[in-house]
Amino acid sequence: MKKIKAALISVFYKEGLGEIAETLHQQGVAIYSTGGTREFIEQFNIPCVPIESLTGFPSILGGRVKTLHPLVFGGILGKRNDEVHLQEMKQYEIPEFDLVIVDLYPFEETVKNFEGNITEDESPIIEKIDIGGPSMIRAAAKNHQDVTVVASKNDYPLLQEILNNQQGQTTYEQRRFFAVKAFDVCSHYDNAISNYFNNASFITPFNKEKRILRYGENPHQSASFYGNLNEVFTQLNGKELSYNNLVDVDAAIQLIKEFDATTFAIIKHTNVCGIAQGVTLKAAWDKALAGDPESAFGGVLICNTAVDIETATAINELFFEVLIAPSFNDEAMTILKSKKNRILLQLKNTSFSTSQYRSLLNGILLQENDNGNFTDWKEEGGRISNANEKEDLIFANLVCKHLKSNAIALIKNKQLIGKGCGQTSRVDALRHAIEKAHQFKFELNSAVLASDAFFPFDDCVKIAHAEGIIAFIQPGGSIRDADSINYSKENNLVMVITGQRHFKH
Image (cartoon, rainbow, N blue to C red; front, side, top):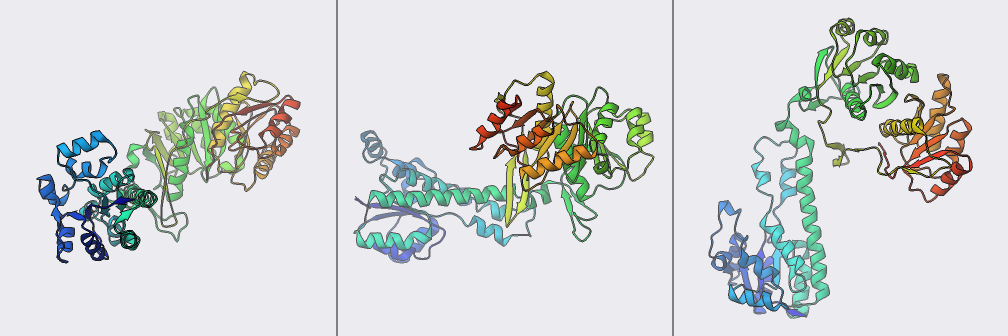
């Protein structure tokens, strides 16, 4: 048990504090306090030591700096069983704070008051970002071996009960309990601030250009885009980009930036429905279109090399919404501009974002981009992949990464010949991929397969093998990985385990 001899109190919420202050005073506890809290306590004829008299420094910068001082934090952090600490505290006349009652500015409440009505003047919100409060709470919680910390008015009743029942003493278990709650308070507070700054509805209105879109995903939904599209591409032709166009354009760019060799891709509803690499851009286009010419109708097209006249002539035969390329030669541009509504975008930048946002429930999810292809390359099957198979497997895994989960990509000679995406089971995704390949008369013998997540059973490997597929790439991690690996070994199949899942929800 440790006796509370000195308390530091600095709170925003004062309801219930009076009774605690009176109890502390009756038990002979010296109370140190700040500004408004000190005035509140003194109303009960309870003496308080102003923090300014301890630090010798007044509250400055409109109250932004008042407790950030070695004499305050030394009194909180000093270890009572450390002779060096005690000697230094005596040398610098630092009081030993046994109890710290500090809460935090009402940041979340302030944000709610401004919800939907935030202007460029965000100072009322910014001023509710507490600095000294979290610092004192963390310091006291860290030193819970010696210090009791109360970080919320919700814990006043418990503290009052302990003070009454234990005559102003606390046990180590109680101090640790309060410390855990204090760290939770700080964590929640930091998350609230982070969410505020990462909330696009807050950031974009006064940091980004606003573009009113014709409508959202459907005509009855209004929509806007906040951001500078000119940093990403230049629009050379066509009608205004729609909400759905922008979503598909983003998916197309995220996909194409994965590849250095000449690549052409076709996107439909954010999924790649055709992609291939070729010696020339025209060859890549022909292979990409052949992968699923039915789905390509009305799609978003993208490539990573200049569009020449031969490719433009071939593309011009298809109805599509958008074509994105790093450049177009003059003859190609003349052909492609023949349809005035056709959107042509010259891509300038593929590194425009390191994070992804999604609004849901009553908040926003933030995550970093899914970068990279694999973390390991472990050949666990019946044989090692040959050079062509390895190239196709690497290509397949990148393509699969950009399909909605559950996802399967079938690749042959760096051409997508079948894909299944957005399915509720991996087997269904595989069956869909095989059906697509059959639909367009592709030969699956010697094809490779990529899966965005592990095979929970060996059924996918067996089904694919029956169709002639000879090599697989998947992240692994199933408790039954051995089933798929053993089947691969028994049937001389390639099985690459990457250790990196690529879910896309």
